[in-house]
Amino acid sequence: MPFFRALLVIFAIAVVLCVAAFLVTSNRKYLRWAWLLFRLGIAAALLFFAVLLLERIV
Image 1: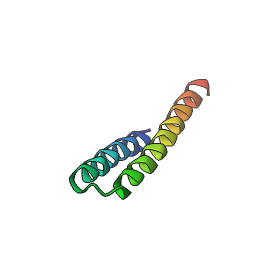
Image 2: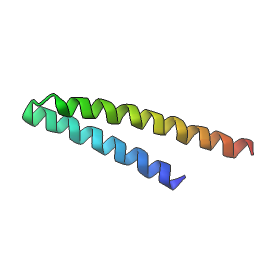
Image 3: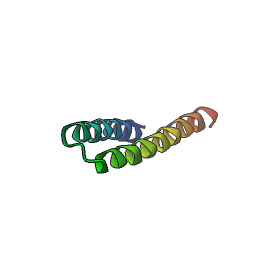
């Protein structure tokens, strides 16, 4: 469980850094990276909650 929490925090920090880089440089590739990392973060969050639910059931 600590692994998933750390992973979610890393994704959140990476998204914020990519958006900040876009605001500084106006380079759209940083927004594409932010969007990709955001989607991966959502997938990781869903996996985190699935594992949490599975632990409660078992």
